[in-house]
Image 1 (cartoon, rainbow, N blue to C red):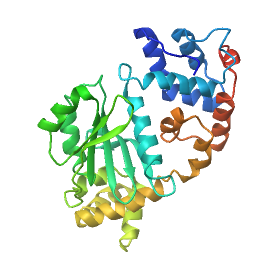
Image 2 (image 1 turned 45 degrees about the vertical axis):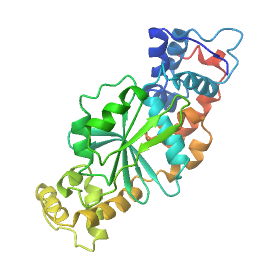
Image 3 (image 1 turned 60 degrees about the vertical axis):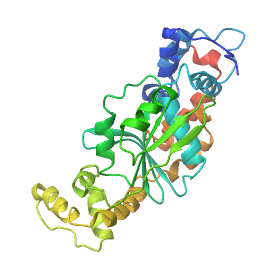
Length: 300
């Protein structure tokens, strides 16, 4: 670890957090370089002539090791924890799918994992407020069989005592482990088909009908949405949940990213599984993370 034990000021912390932004990842995907990465590393003031020979991939891991600290955690640290410890630690890309920022009514679910059931993980880090949590939970209970909130110590008691008792509560501990404080109640019967319908794409609506053995509507495009919705909301909630689950696992499979993620530093797993990149863009990213930081400092 080249950074060592450091204390970040607010400017350095902001730069460290942005290193894991989609902007940096997309720049690397486009041209195997990221001028933004170079600027952020300079802003952090952690690289000098003595340590700049380290590769960019190691820089990501080293910065992330600082961001895992309770004092610096933000949303990405939580997403990375769920990705590594649950998606890869409990499941695998062979059997499970992870979705990020999945739209549900007026909310966007931070992370959803689909395996034998549907489970949502709403993140409330030490830096977050809880003012939107009640509405988010109400929305998620209409779409997912299991709803979890993963949080820090400062929010734990309030979430346990003041929100729906059917939700699971997970704690990201000081040692960066996920502790189950309360298990979620699994209920497919509470799914509201009309809400689930609006979270899916047209392609997924059609596949759901096919999986139910229903004929596809022969109507003009202007009428198709309404006809599909009428059909899909008529299904029994628990049956619709199971069919939609298998549909999403097919349409949004991450299996094609298995070889790519295996070549990345662990700190990039979460973002690599949530941003679509082509084969050429994958190659560009691998080139970028294999670049010595001395060279990367001059990107752009």
